[in-house]
Image (cartoon, rainbow, N blue to C red; front, side, top):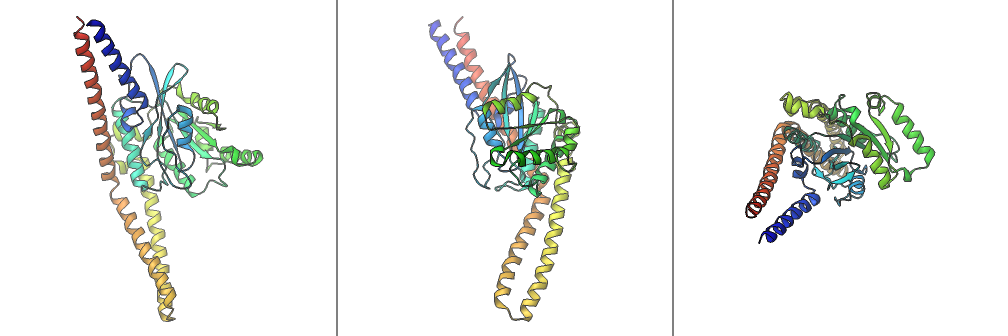
Length: 347
């Protein structure tokens, strides 16, 4: 009979470990803090970058996970995801996949709320990041508006104090001639509007050549560092700021106001063009301008809504994150209760 309980315990333990290894949900990282497995050292690394930069592909290659990868301009990382754990030296490593601020399925307000809620909830639960990987396509002709906006938000989320735990990764080198890629890399490293200020503060820059060896070499540069909280974590938890009062929240607020200003200018131009079309009895132009005006009004309303609901969006995301954490803890308590009962039966 004792042998039966031993096998029962081993079966339960194996099932729990298997579930934890395959768990790529939000709660996985939140239960992977200091008390998750005291006999092991776990490094948690966030991966950020624009939509389509190759974040999820990098994570899948490095970890052996199977997170969904987008194709074309459509984003598949609409939620924060965690990879399955994998070994890197004496460390167990998990990677956090985050959506870009140009996500095709969510507004920038939702993306900021989601990432901030995830990071702050993890921080409150004792989880610390060993590092952050920022992925950038070297195949981009230039670092345009989308890439610049993503990098600017990335800087606001991280702050300066954590930059020594940051590695900037250029990928998709196979899509450009070597000399072109090297020229772009040089510009990124030397221009103040791009990566230079971050590199000056201690961040590293590395190339990813689309191999497992390359991915693991990149991760080793941050996996063994002492964890450092990100700026957004300190602002929301230690300083108890509202999301709108954080550096990232204020930056997004500025961007939304700038978009609103441009929309208003466009609206005025459409009004003038509509008046001219009416004077000229140009029915075709009038119809097209009406369509454009309707679309613009929808954009303005969406922008106004995004700006007004930043705080509530963050609160909702944080509540969902806490609920997932509570469910994960409940499952763990249930497992250990079953193990305890099985062990008690042996004596």
